[in-house]
Length: 266
Image (cartoon, rainbow, N blue to C red):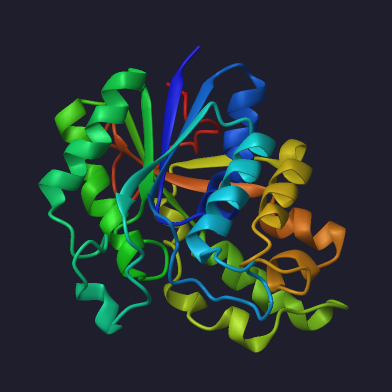
């Protein structure tokens, strides 16, 4: 059995981007390890959410623990940095925030986990973190360096198949349900074009575990959100596949081979 380390920026990112893959690996007996860079301290706080004396980071840590349980995570640990906020916010430069962290120092924190776990696979984000969030971009930068330092055999970038989602949006007008306008903003720059995708994991078998993990992050993903409000059949279409770009062993760019179906292929 293999040890697979998933490196994410904030609590809830793991459920959205890689939850099905994590559940599938865990169900097959592999050791799934989740490293979360920040506590998500700067997420939105719905009115009346927090108890007296409770911080958002406290609440999100509890939610993350439950999501991890649902996905079969064997170990979850925080890298110890503060949420940097959205792009171009003054908080991007705050002392202790992840976006402003020294890359070598942060990479060595991740290396410690990779070495402790004797990780065969490391999962990070694509070069722009999927949609440009500074913490997501830093996950890529730090993850690349940590993979080099630890000499992790297989490294993948979690991403989205941009062409798939653009095609889906083209068909939305014919459907009974369509996403709100704000959910489609930035779609043309989200993820990566299909030509770069090396690995497509069918997670429909674990779609309910993925949805339950999303639901566990109730402070950020409400029942009325785009993520959970869609009909069951559409939810499976949208969330039933997860995409990756293999960067170790190096894959050609653009990728011209058959898409792998697992992070452990080859």
